Length: 210
Image 1 (tube, helix red, strand yellow):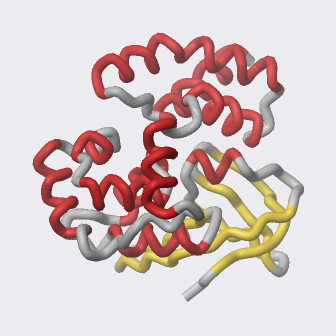
Image 2 (cartoon, rainbow, N blue to C red; image 1 turned 90 degrees about the vertical axis):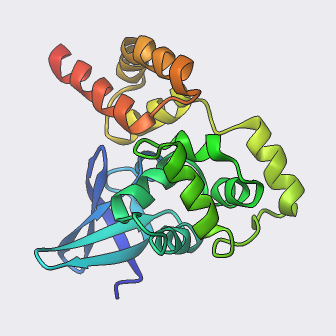
């Protein structure tokens, strides 16, 4: 198993990064939040999980070991593969997922693209005794407070991801403004803004502008 990769970031894409390790470029699938923390040319260390299939070897990367562990635990639930597990971590932090499971919060899970009400109920049952309690320094109370405050605004997440991909702050602001109607429609319908989809839409507007 490849536990982590460490080296300069050679390339970034909306859902992947290439990290140079010993002269070899390792392609690593990452969430937009992880991508947002990377910069081309700068050193990075990503915890990784290697998913082996008959026709592929896919390396998934995470900001830390805890995120990687939750990614692997999520896949012990029936119907959860690596892509859905990564989507869950793209919407919620590990502690937010632990809190959602501990409190039976269906709404938090249905905010993840690909998870409906029945799927959320099933996941809550299967993951109840697997994820454990939130690990935040303040324990469950701290996690509940963080959940009440919510994740960083989607605008900040999207802007950071675009800047991480090499776009200027002005370009990022214009792209965020362009996808705001799409984000507001999603917020009105589901209560959350799907950052990965918004990132793809923002990149399309930037490519058309160039």
